[in-house]
Length: 332
Image 1 (cartoon, helix red, strand yellow):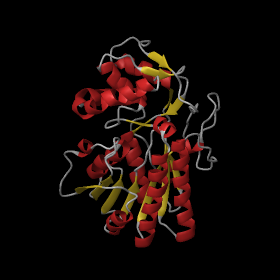
Image 2 (tube, helix red, strand yellow):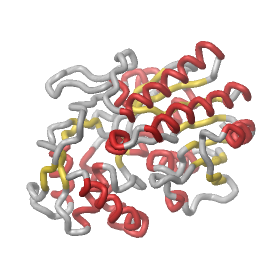
Image 3 (cartoon, rainbow, N blue to C red):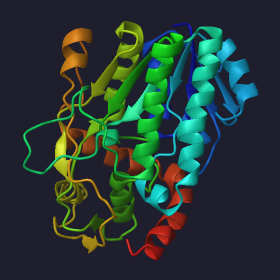
């Protein structure tokens, strides 16, 4: 694992992985990122110049992808359009990036015989009832609810087909909701944190009963490295840290740690087709590969995340006004 090509490495989860991998391995990393609104070059500042290279480009650019894949050992595919609200407004970019982009990458990996790891989401499984004791496993049927999750499901199936039909040396991971540094302020947790910093009341979809299984981005990164190093080719591994919380609990926790009353938030109209509950069973990853999360205390992880946004206003401030203007148009 001497040379990694990380797609989408200027995005939230990808940039966290780049920082983590450079700190915990001796690998050199090339990041390929289109730098759409969700990618931020500032998320990759301060990395060692002798081990890190940045390339701005599109994963749908077959010639560029072919050149970069030929010169690497492992492709780690984070690049994706990933915001549910945006996919409901305009699905087409999700088809281009998540389907065609993934196809372009796996074709290059197949051609050059490279190891490939595909990052996906638990949203491909649809949702669970709030009182359902079950959790998603590797054998849970796909049942996506949105243009975002359906295109991610499609990309997963492409990778599986290329493993079976062409011998692609690939693994897949489906992870629960991430939180931590470098996350765009359109997303739920950083939006609420930055609202409070700006003296704006946090916004809660509907009654806030929807449950997400939260994991710190560093734990996601350590799990991906573990899968790359130890995972069985052709297998899927679910990544989760037993962090189930409903949205109301998360908002109240943020308010508590930022010195505000627990009820100092506004309820806004719910998202269409809003999934009720996600829950990950990461038994295979833990028992077969020996992985364990470090941020097992969600409250401590939230406090750490609040501190990062307080200390890095220059990173998120340029995104904030435009993001809130878009939500205002949507009544959210």
